[in-house]
Image 1 (cartoon, helix red, strand yellow):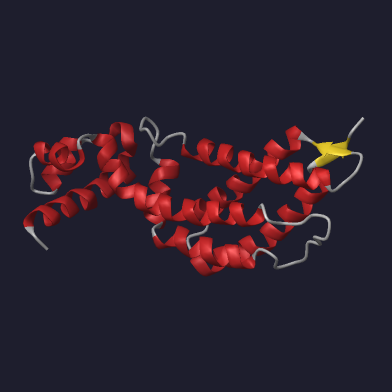
Image 2: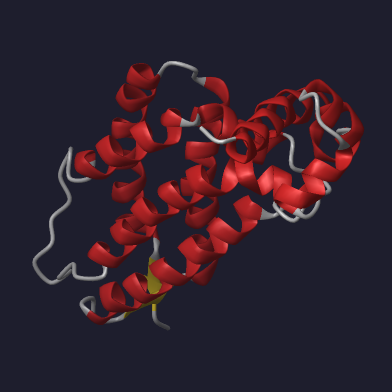
Length: 205
């Protein structure tokens, strides 16, 4: 590893500790650089600013998780509700991809979820909920088209987006064991899918 890469990694390692202890807003760039044995200027050289340093920790894990999520949403758009019957375990493969990706860099995701206030990442959960809303709005329209006399219940659709994302947020912030997390989330997903199918539509009157 050349000196630049080594110094960059030192800053990331020290920043993880500082951000975890104090949160984004109160974290000291001077403390991070001193702990790394470097000047504050090194942070600006490698990361441009405090947000850039935080992003160097959380961007890759977040992007990996979101790629899996968006691929799943895209695949769900292919569902044919005229013949679809939900059964237990339908989404196990999704869980088996997502949970390892989340727990591979759990510390980074905890920073994102619990310590990002004041950063450009502080509304990440809301952004993911909005993406979920958009994806499931299209899915719900297809579902409604297969059910004469029904229309999309916009409130329930949005509520389910919150519930779905918050289920995963609660899991990673409260369950440190990856195997237990996977065991817990599978029946939760089954339950959410079942209830989504039952409650997303209302009578078109």
